[in-house]
Amino acid sequence: RRLEEEGVKFIGPKHYSSSKMGDKIESKKLALEAKVNTIPGYNEAISGPDEAVKIAQGIGYPVMIKASAGGGGKGLRVAFNDKEAHEGFSSCVNEARNAFGDDRVFIEKYVLEPRHIEIQLIGDSFGNYVYLNERDCSIQRRHQKVIEEAPSPFVDPAMRKAMGEQAVALARAVNYESAGTVEFVVGADKSFYFLEMNTRLQVEHPVTELITGVDLVELMIRVAAGEKLPLTQDQVQLNGWSMECRINAEDPFRGFLPSTGRLVKFQPPKETTDANGTTRGDTGVYDGGEISMFYDSMIAKLIVHAKDRNSTIERMRDALNGFVIRGIS
Image (cartoon, rainbow, N blue to C red; front, side, top):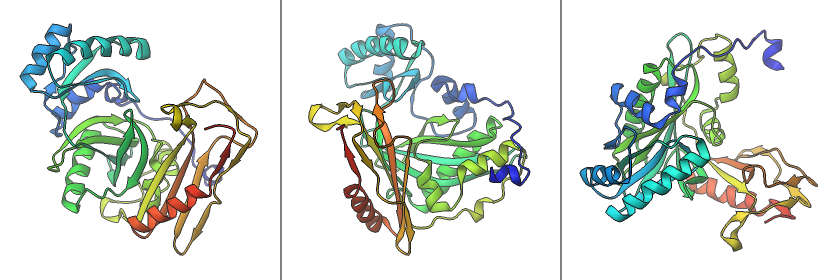
């Protein structure tokens, strides 16, 4: 409403290679062309389990077998030997076909002791791009993010610059216009490799907003309305530390099975901004509402911001302790 009053009109995104960037095989080819670091692997669709074993032997174990159209941890297997590669290929194909209607899979080197670090960026229709630092999304369960933070405790300024510049090079190569995220897998030796590009806003975008002071949603609308980016790379800030916890309707005593039922009580911690930081909650559920089996198990996000990582963890602990949920696990 505020943007409408300012005369900002959404005119729709221009055409760019978003469909290609959403396809893991095609996006890796584009990344190679843009001279972005990519994980050693075989980026063509594989015909069968015997070919998968040969390719895995050529790359060297361990390898990761992944569905091209995959996401959310579906259609993904790690193999440490020929037997696991053979069986993993078949199960990955079946899962990918059932989940995505696309049974193409590819194989790449599995990075040991990996971290999942992603670069948030945004581009406009005038060829301007900025990267808004990184998020560390390494704390995962079943390949689904659980806790995200920004910045990463692992990334130094030189690494941040190198990853950011590669992310921008990839976005520029496909004339990307909007907010997007380039995801990297990072090894213990600080080597980083392109994973995929998310051509959309992500669940964890608030941690970036809090360390940069940039409203990503507003910026996306302004870019879509044909406006120029209002900031340059040297104006991007990195203030304090931010962390997000995904609040999931899952039962930890039953292997984290989804938990359904009525929310007898749903009382998130009070949203506050004070001298010590910010506590923010994003949700779409409410007291008395029903958590059904038809949706993702995430029912809320809890985001905090403070001056440094230890202060942020302390603030998050206090916020989690004050979060009251009854009726579901």
